[in-house]
Amino acid sequence: MPHPDEPYYCSEQIPIPVELPDILKNFTKAAIRTQPSDLLTWSAKYFRCLAINQTPPVKERLEIPLATQKTDSGLTLGLIKVLHKQLGPKNVVQLAEIEEKWKGLNLPVEKLKIINQLGGFQQDVEWLKFIAISCSTISKDMTETMSKVCEILTADPPGANSRIKFEVFKDLYTFLVFQIEKSTSSKHVEEVCNYIKSEWANRQDGYVHPRNFYHPECPKLSQMV
Image 1 (cartoon, one colour):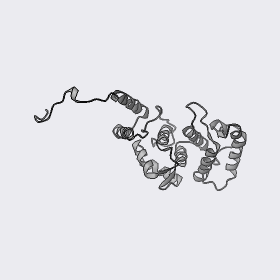
Image 2: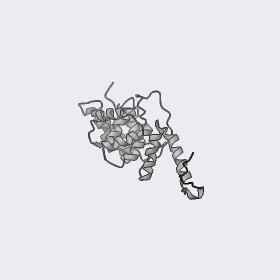
Image 3: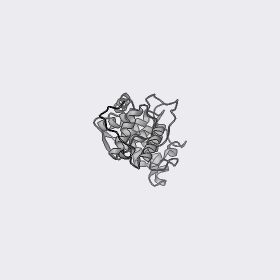
């Protein structure tokens, strides 16, 4: 029962913003698309981001988990896209800021540590390289990794070619070959990049997309058997 000294309020005394129904509707849609494992923590991050005019941790669409996923970390392409929407405008991101957004998506910190170890990341992280390493942890090979990188970084609409600049492809592909596959020779990287540039990028205004490196004539992106 209410305490006798507590004031009573009628509906006229409680102002309800006219935007509230739309806010709650958008929140519900965002929660359904994102499917957070900890709804309470995610909700707090969601409304905090709205309050300070930042991009909230929301997926673009609902994802169905794949049984073939390489790890059971909870990390998906959709969640990497969310992180990129939140942090992508920056070229270099503080590791502490990545960890904050990571926790906002209820992703395990151990997975973040693995990504940092694979990429050799310290306090100042080159963001696109972080994206590339993250994609490698949910892909079966280098070709799939670069395909995911294209899908995340492209400015093309969903369902289009997922084009990115050849220079971006070359930088991230080279980084992954030496960082993940521990290659000690640049010969194979040069062969792949020369093919893609001469056969595709030069004819596509300097852009490349996954169909180019999935082409049967393209040298295999991975040197690993």
